[in-house]
Length: 267
Image (cartoon, rainbow, N blue to C red):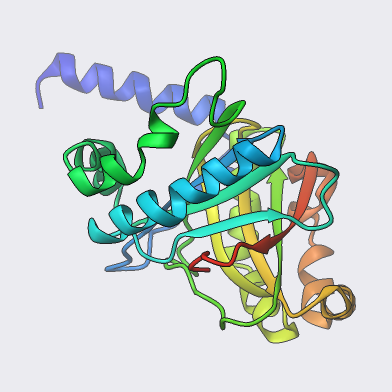
């Protein structure tokens, strides 16, 4: 190694060591599972103000976007409305991608699909006077090592819970992910009936740093019962009592949204 390169590398290493406590470095730098392939998830929130906009967005996904995205490899696309909404407020869309490259290339592929462009015309050509929606909020997530692929639940009447956990810093955000991956929280979830659809670490979006996940239940009664079971689980009590995983250190906020799938949702 040339002397100049060695000095630069030493400076970088020294700076990182100063900024990140050694205990945190050890936890953040744990080796990935060999041959783990991670998925990426785009989570879109469509803000709509009336029934016309809601129908336009729903028609767009049912008739244009879902068929076209399925064709290029994005399977199991979820489209949800709020559970017990207060008026017309939002539509939530979950789009999985097999890789980051697939996510980046998807818009280019869609505009070359003539069937998509024709079916999507009412949505794509909406004007400022009569827009298809008010705004789109979008975040991109990377799957967790202990749940690297989305799991589609059984097709039946069901209720979904979308949860976002915000952390006070990037390091504490990694610590919360470690709690799910390495400390065994995902395993406990599955054992007590908190059935996950996906877990994702936010790569791009708002409210960073955060992790977001989705759970599925038959109904609200099952939701309440299984969360109560989780809270009293001995393994969970053991993990949550560890000082390094205390909420006061690694969690700054929780946002939850209850959702129901549209008739054409693939999740």
